[in-house]
Image (cartoon, rainbow, N blue to C red):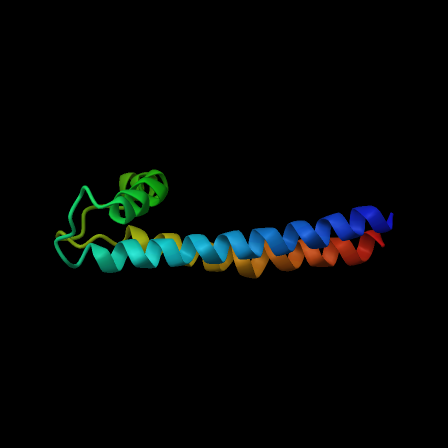
Length: 98
């Protein structure tokens, strides 16, 4: 059972790192949206392609709020929730499996 415990710990660590990286990508996209970026810049294109699937789904749910896009904020709050709920749950499960 120690293999399953180690697997769950590793999975929790990978999820934590992936969520942190994605949160920083969303923050970078939000900061870039304040200026007029070159849409042909590879970094700008990457940021838009990496975040648009998630932010588009959130925008469809949120009502219009006077031209202000709150979807990055909602996405960051969801990521923080997952980091506080999902990652410790996997760690706790790993301890119980052992």
